[in-house]
Length: 235
Image (cartoon, rainbow, N blue to C red; front, side, top):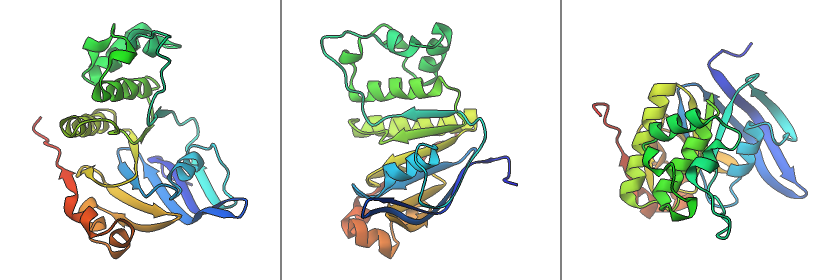
């Protein structure tokens, strides 16, 4: 029987698309109150692994455990907006949701002042906060953040990581972040998993960036340029 704090576990899974091997012998366990950052170059199988973990794709080999009735909040890489179809933040968040809940989560992510703004007018950082608020509306057990700092300036990236750390502390949910590199990564991340069809290496960010497999995949400059964001527990 799986421990109650385990949300998802994939065990020695393989996924193939025709003659292409997307994942080979991959194992990963996601628990409550845990932050995992999944990294790898384009085509490494990150999206495929996430689809398996969310129950959207059945692997050809291996086993998958998904906690029954698990609620998932998903924050996409980007939101494509039709410029001729005005949509306010309020309308975007209240589609299928209660207005009161929408206001609450927008306040939680520090963006309550955006409630009546058109989505098209938001900056990159503002949009990411709104997308994060949308994901939190589901009261998720597992929060999946796909490239959460994409299109955000460096200061905004640090602020988002601070916010993600606070969400983990307050909600106790599992958080899976997906990224193509480790340019800036949270020190609060419990585990970084470096994927390239297989799990090349995994562990704390400071350990992973010194691992030969990481250096081979991303090059020594990637380790030198890495900035590890340290969460302040006094804030």
